Image 1: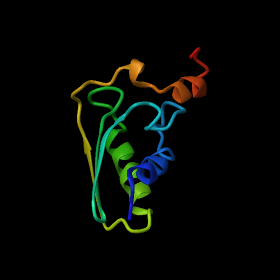
Image 2: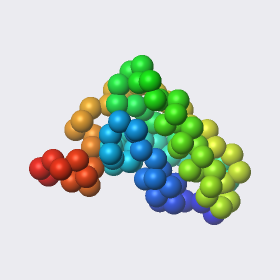
Image 3: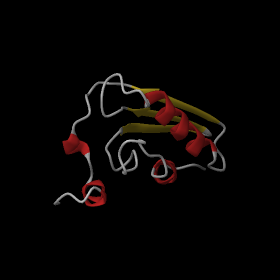
Image 4: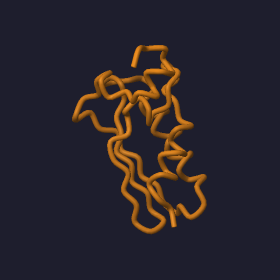
Amino acid sequence: MVDKETVLDALKRVYDPEIPVDVVNLGLVYEVVMDGGRVDVTMTTTAVGCPVGNYIAAQAEQAIRNIPGVTEVHVEIVHEPPWHEKMISQEGRRMLGWRT
Protein backbone atom coordinates (compact mmCIF):
# COMPACT_ATOMS: atom_id res chain seq x y z
CA MET A 1 0.00 0.00 0.00
CA VAL A 2 1.33 3.43 -0.99
CA ASP A 3 1.39 6.05 1.75
CA LYS A 4 1.72 9.82 1.71
CA GLU A 5 5.24 9.80 3.17
CA THR A 6 6.47 7.57 0.31
CA VAL A 7 4.93 9.93 -2.24
CA LEU A 8 6.50 12.97 -0.58
CA ASP A 9 9.88 11.22 -0.47
CA ALA A 10 9.62 10.57 -4.22
CA LEU A 11 8.68 14.21 -4.83
CA LYS A 12 11.77 15.34 -2.92
CA ARG A 13 13.71 14.18 -6.00
CA VAL A 14 11.85 16.70 -8.21
CA TYR A 15 13.35 20.18 -8.51
CA ASP A 16 12.34 23.46 -10.03
CA PRO A 17 15.19 23.77 -12.57
CA GLU A 18 15.70 27.41 -11.60
CA ILE A 19 15.92 26.85 -7.82
CA PRO A 20 18.18 24.28 -6.11
CA VAL A 21 15.43 23.06 -3.74
CA ASP A 22 13.00 20.17 -4.24
CA VAL A 23 9.29 20.85 -4.77
CA VAL A 24 8.33 19.56 -1.31
CA ASN A 25 10.73 21.82 0.58
CA LEU A 26 9.85 24.74 -1.71
CA GLY A 27 6.27 24.36 -0.51
CA LEU A 28 4.92 23.68 -3.99
CA VAL A 29 3.01 20.51 -3.03
CA TYR A 30 -0.39 21.43 -1.63
CA GLU A 31 -2.16 18.07 -1.38
CA VAL A 32 -1.52 14.36 -1.83
CA VAL A 33 -4.54 12.03 -1.96
CA MET A 34 -4.31 8.28 -2.35
CA ASP A 35 -7.05 5.83 -3.28
CA GLY A 36 -5.61 2.33 -3.63
CA GLY A 37 -2.98 2.58 -6.36
CA ARG A 38 -4.17 5.99 -7.55
CA VAL A 39 -2.27 9.09 -6.42
CA ASP A 40 -3.59 12.62 -6.97
CA VAL A 41 -1.28 15.54 -6.31
CA THR A 42 -2.23 19.19 -6.27
CA MET A 43 0.75 21.50 -6.55
CA THR A 44 1.76 24.92 -7.77
CA THR A 45 4.68 26.75 -9.30
CA THR A 46 6.60 29.70 -7.89
CA ALA A 47 4.90 32.05 -10.38
CA VAL A 48 1.77 32.07 -12.51
CA GLY A 49 2.80 31.35 -16.08
CA CYS A 50 6.00 29.64 -14.98
CA PRO A 51 7.62 28.38 -18.20
CA VAL A 52 8.70 25.10 -16.56
CA GLY A 53 5.38 24.31 -14.85
CA ASN A 54 4.50 21.48 -17.23
CA TYR A 55 8.03 20.10 -16.94
CA ILE A 56 7.82 20.07 -13.13
CA ALA A 57 4.40 18.38 -13.25
CA ALA A 58 5.72 15.72 -15.66
CA GLN A 59 8.76 15.09 -13.44
CA ALA A 60 6.48 14.78 -10.39
CA GLU A 61 4.23 12.34 -12.22
CA GLN A 62 7.19 10.19 -13.27
CA ALA A 63 8.66 10.16 -9.77
CA ILE A 64 5.34 8.93 -8.36
CA ARG A 65 4.85 6.33 -11.13
CA ASN A 66 8.16 4.77 -10.07
CA ILE A 67 6.74 3.90 -6.64
CA PRO A 68 5.81 0.20 -6.38
CA GLY A 69 2.04 -0.21 -6.12
CA VAL A 70 1.14 3.01 -7.91
CA THR A 71 -1.17 2.29 -10.83
CA GLU A 72 -2.44 5.76 -11.73
CA VAL A 73 -1.13 9.29 -11.18
CA HIS A 74 -2.74 12.67 -11.68
CA VAL A 75 -0.79 15.87 -11.02
CA GLU A 76 -2.71 19.13 -11.16
CA ILE A 77 -1.02 22.54 -11.21
CA VAL A 78 -3.07 25.25 -9.47
CA HIS A 79 -2.36 28.87 -8.61
CA GLU A 80 -4.67 29.31 -5.64
CA PRO A 81 -3.45 29.89 -3.10
CA PRO A 82 -0.55 31.65 -4.76
CA TRP A 83 2.90 30.46 -3.74
CA HIS A 84 4.98 32.70 -1.52
CA GLU A 85 8.54 32.30 -0.24
CA LYS A 86 7.15 31.92 3.29
CA MET A 87 5.98 28.45 2.15
CA ILE A 88 9.60 27.22 1.93
CA SER A 89 10.37 24.76 4.72
CA GLN A 90 13.19 25.22 7.21
CA GLU A 91 15.13 22.54 5.32
CA GLY A 92 14.55 24.41 2.05
CA ARG A 93 15.80 27.62 3.62
CA ARG A 94 18.95 25.82 4.73
CA MET A 95 19.40 24.45 1.19
CA LEU A 96 19.24 28.03 -0.11
CA GLY A 97 21.69 29.25 2.53
CA TRP A 98 19.04 31.45 4.16
CA ARG A 99 18.88 32.03 7.87
CA THR A 100 16.29 29.82 9.53
